[in-house]
Length: 70
Image (cartoon, rainbow, N blue to C red):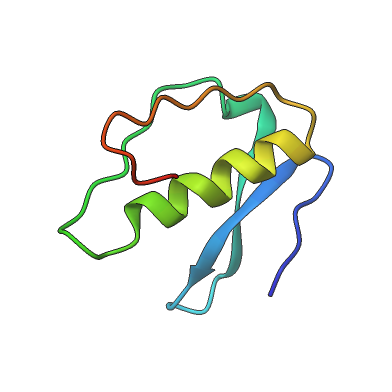
């Protein structure tokens, strides 16, 4: 599994052979959307992104209105 870099957060691998995909930190101040059906990993994805941002020194705030993160 790829690791975060100084300039980006590992967000996954492309099945098309493009290798690891990274979200660059300088572009991470944009809006984003994580959508999917129940049980597809949206909460886990958000947890992983929040942890990666925290490791990179970026402040993170999560509001969990349903209690999925507890």
